[in-house]
Structures are given as structure tokens and as C-alpha cells.
Length: 96
Image (cartoon, rainbow, N blue to C red):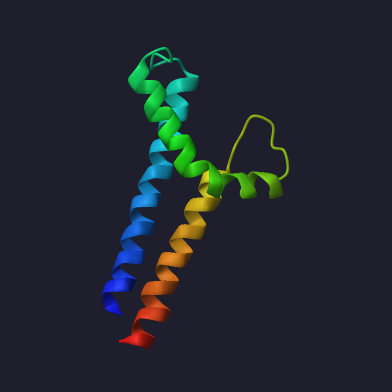
């Protein structure tokens, strides 16, 4: 059972970094630092979009319009942090 908990925590940690990578990449794309016509950039952008958008879309639907500011990644990172801490401090000690 401990291996399952460690696997879930590791998956949450990896997803955390995917979200951060998507945010940084969106900034690079918006400020025209990366070449959007580059095939690798397009594949990387598509991958990050497909990985993060299913979790970000429900948050964006609930959030009010804040103009050009998108805080849905911050909210998702807080949710992941809460889940990770809940698993490590509540679930894991109860199982072990």
C-alpha cells in the first residue's frame, strides 16, 4: 500500500512540473521568445496543452473573467499541493 501512495505522490509531483512548464512556455510563446513555426516547439506546445488543459478547463469555467490574467494554474497548483499534503499527512499514516 505504501508503494501505491508513493506512486500517487510522484505522479502529482510530475504533474506539478508539467503545469509549471506549460505556464513558462505560454509566457515564452506570448512574448515571442520561441519560434511558433518550429516543428519541435509546436509538438512541445501541443503536448503541454493536451496534458494540462483537461485539469485547467473546469477551473477556468468556474473562475470569473479577470481580463487577460489567467490564475487557473495557480489554483490547480494549490489543489495539487493540498492533495499531496492530505495524502502524506492523513492517508499515509492511517494506512501504515
